[in-house]
Length: 68
Image 1: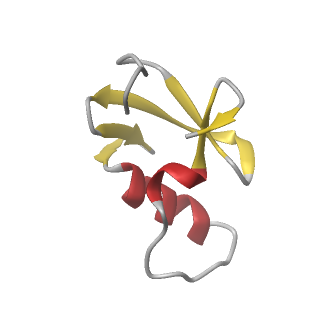
Image 2: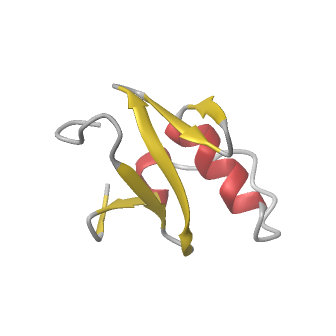
């Protein structure tokens, strides 16, 4: 996550109220657990009833209104 600082909040593209917090260079905290962006994105996507097996990690998250 180039240029995004630790502790920054990312917003899910399908719901601004779904967020994750950057905790390491390549890890986020989502729902109280450490995840990759792909894992967090898949969990968030599945909450909408979409049963994909994988997601393109950065395309599911926004930072300051811009898709990663």
